[in-house]
Image (tube, rainbow, N blue to C red; front, side):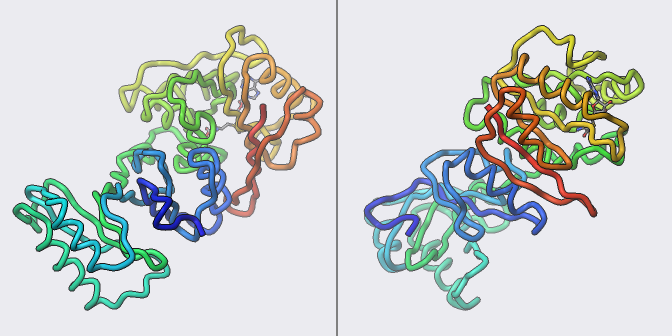
Length: 314
Ligand SMILES: C[S@@+](CC[C@H](N)C(=O)[O-])C[C@H]1O[C@@H](n2cnc3c(N)ncnc32)[C@H](O)[C@@H]1O
């Protein structure tokens, strides 16, 4: 059991992910919520903005949590729960066992129990109702606004660029709940990770060795009116120390590289950061251990025919 009526959680998060990113979503949930999702939903007392994850479709900020719909309605009336310009929706989960008619009826009953004026067409707030396991839950509905999809239109993109969904998740995996951490992507390519970090208000910088790629990265940042946080240079010359490095290491598939170059990158990451999130084409645990990292957690996801590994290292 993930919860019972004596152990109430404050938020219900509804997840969605393509099959090839299931492990990545699970890793993000472990880092952010310290637990695994149950199917495509997760309960947590941690209040997280749904729009800050590529995998959280929506969140329900729980107000009433009961064994039956009747009890939910009773409590809404008893507590005189009031909203102006509200709309009530039923949240369909993957394993929803409520018929369409029951869903309509339940939404209508809850809508009439709430004190205030409903406004279906142009609501100021959306309220959600859902039956999960054998519990009925009512709360404020918070939908992922998906504004971060604008980065899909970045002017410069390479075939080895990460997807902006993966990049966004890497930021969450890197910083967890602490949005004040200082982050670096010291092999930043055209800056996919940097764009997501800046969008989320994270203190992030990038370094890229190849002048043309560094200039394309700057162009991407400029296109979205972000400040220039990119330096053209080599990871080995970075002198500052950061809380987190996020490194999509050159693998030799798209970008020519050697084992020595990879070692140099990982050894440099050890010097400049307390924590490393490494994205690689193969398991690099041995090289990570030799550099002095401990692999705390990991996941993999596929992109086309390739599998990519994510290692969370301290
Ligand atoms: C796999 S790509 C990163 C792609 C990036 N994540 C993106 O989405 O655009 C690795 C990048 O590291 C850069 N690189 C390789 N060696 C480096 C070094 N020693 N210091 C800094 N950057 C380096 C490469 O030029 C390449 O652009």
